[in-house]
Length: 197
Image 1 (cartoon, rainbow, N blue to C red):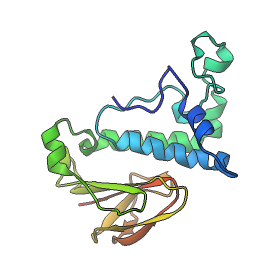
Image 2 (image 1 turned 120 degrees about the vertical axis):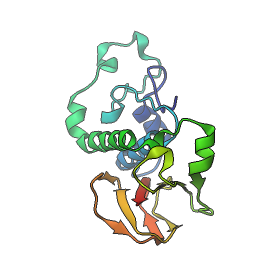
Image 3 (image 1 turned 180 degrees about the vertical axis):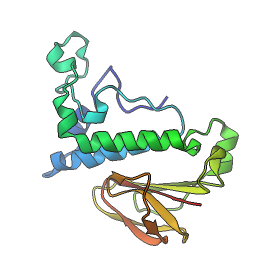
């Protein structure tokens, strides 16, 4: 089971508020939150999302809130409207995962057959492909790249006719945007998800 926060300990937002430093840290949190959920929901294994994580719910910095009041433990539904972009992004990631079995390969043998990491040098980017209609999927190949840097970074993609599903913190399962591969930039704290048929 893969998760970034649960009922015990800090929420993801609390963890980010404690660890992301700098003059513009608060402004960067939504992008970092999206990237973390992209990693979680495109990773192999079973994803677990704490209730409220999809709307950036915090526990006011309280790591062990079982004795805390409802003001700490309740779901603040106002956050759904305030963070609608993140809610919709995570909903899109869940739909992507459900629609494409390549993100749910059940065996080690399947992982060895279909999952291949790309050499990204020292760019700070982690990238991999899920190939040959992985796990019975409808896409011939999927490419996922995570830029964990707090600034834009470049990567060289295999030169194919890629269709963009996720870029610059936006997800669109019906996208018609094409990318030919080669040298591309990935926005700070974001992911790139592409596929080809």
